[in-house]
Image 1 (tube, helix red, strand yellow):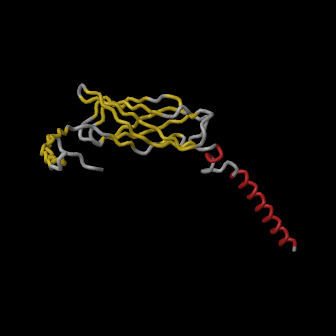
Image 2: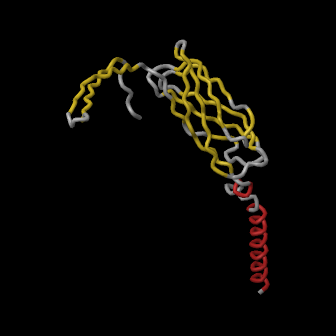
Image 3: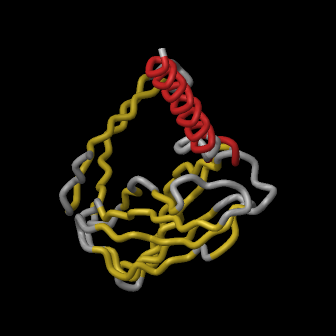
Length: 185
């Protein structure tokens, strides 16, 4: 994480050199004063969903960690989720105040509609907060993956259980056949 400059005024000297119409060289020396004020800044953490795999036509809960990495507390923080039209549901969450170094979780209840195609979807999180009488905002981006229904079952292949049962049955019958053949012979 980059360190933030200290609050205060900073003077930066600037020299502008240029050549005029008669090949005459000019030099202009000025200074610019920058005033640095403390401000909240945010880091969006790893987004999690429940269920962990999102497929079309399914409702899911999305949790988005929002951490204040700035040098000032953020007051009245509200988070607005900006998504593709494929995702519907509650897209606003009020987090309240977030102190320097603290994190809160924005939670959204959404549905991936039945026309959602499997893909990586870029989403924006608009974070709005107040600093005294001033309203500030920033936008942070993250990706949300929608899987196909076929790929969603890869963690636990739905065809695995019947195949395992058949395999166990074949192994049992083979074992019984060999056992009785040895016993008979």
